[in-house]
Image (cartoon, rainbow, N blue to C red; front, side, top):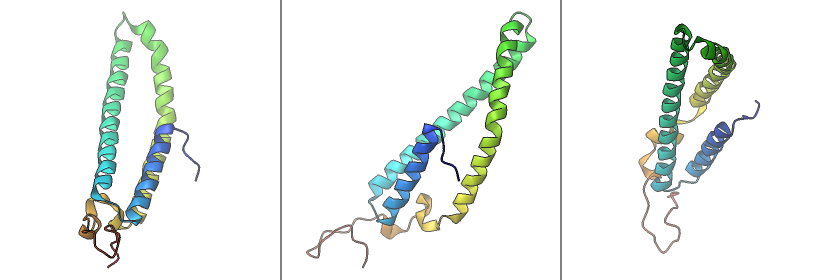
Length: 135
């Protein structure tokens, strides 16, 4: 599998890697909540960008139909279609890869399905580490 070229996708991949590592060592709920907040923020950003892109493409199509703006829009519409045509197959591939990866993640690593013992901090005892969840 090829490495992603976009910085945003690299960041998301690193975040998932770090999240998996942190879950494997039973970290605190605050850190898990921070990752959840980041994920929600990225989802909101994606929604906003998708809405903006849809609005821009609709506006470009509308401007093509207006005789006053047809000349300028006819320059940009093919470029927008070219970018859209370039991005769609990659988006489809990324979504398929994401769905495939989600089927391989055990339920204990999905934040919405955390086990309660993974989210509680134990009181510090003479034995040592309050984060030790082995017994």
